[in-house]
Image (cartoon, rainbow over all chains, first blue to last red; front, side, top):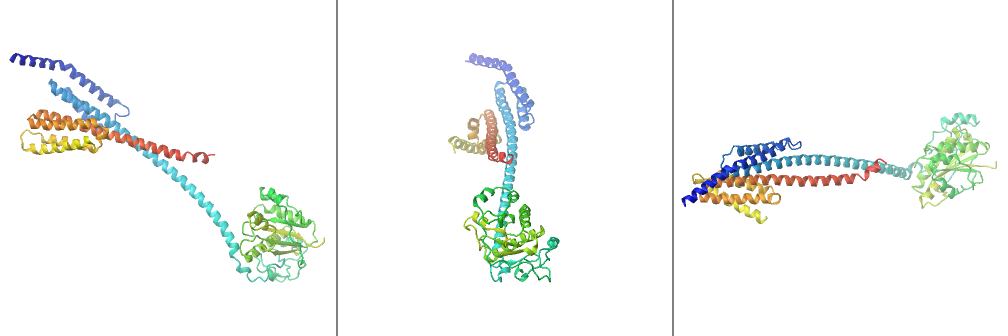
Length: 358
Length: 128
């Protein structure tokens, strides 16, 4: 029995001696692994605390006694410490990647927010434009006070004096400026006040039975509707069914809801002035018309203001003011249905008509 | 809670009890026992049951064996087992953190890809 124990002890000692190269192998393997970690371009500077623990564990393995059991224990611990060092470094690298992705997300969200803001701003601009258009409509329907006292919506309004800018033209044409036979009846007009004292008028009162405005050819209008205003007006001429005695200015020559000329209206006004110049002896009647939208009073006011604006523009282009009478017809004389937008657009117009038999 | 985790809980409680029971004994390793038990609990909290189940199981078993060694009077073996339990718990924690971080990276990358996809349709219209 004692011999057997001695034999076992000898075998253990031999095994211990034999384990010396294996201990070196373990150490070498773990040491090389740590060296690789220390030189890894991505991981070298990460998880330094865990790497220090692993290096200490490997050093303990290197300095361990020849005791195989102790060596196995230290090798077990060192191997796991090296694993931990690697894993901790990889975790830090992943954390850096996560932080970069989070920054990228913030940038993406910021860009999306900017796009939404731009879209919202564009929508607001669109709504504001719509609101402006609605306000103009409301102003047309909500400013009847000035004309509420007007006795009748239908009378032809004799010409009032042209604005000061038009005086030279009027003088050149031989007609005294500011000659208005019924300035009082045009008192609601927003145009400049008549010249004081000029009460005589060379303009005859409007004939009571002025021909009704002719209906423009719908097909022609529809075909021309897509052209720019100035281009359409460049071919403006007497209405086909008006016996060559009237010209109709479409509503687009005015800004919506106002008596202000739109850009490009000059072309049409020049055409009308030239047409009138061909018959310098005939009196002229300018009628403003609106659609049926809004109150009748406001429509009368607007139609009169537009007719007066056309008159002023024609006078400025050399048409004698004394030839001209203006009237605001409001919505009383439609040429198309007011039930649809196209019909209403046709109803909004200013008609310049040659009177008399000349 | 998974059966493994419950088992580890029991082991941790047992080890803590053992630590206090052996506190009065000379040459007992209560500090190492408590430290190993705390490391095991930390590994559980880190999600080691999901990300490092093998290391978690080793750590629990080694802690239980260390307790038995203490009871058997083999303090050296107990210390070795506690060291192994500790390092396995630490490894489990490290693996769990890496697993969680990698998952977060994947989720974040998918989120960013979705955001880029949402923004890309409008890009051509912006630069026609």
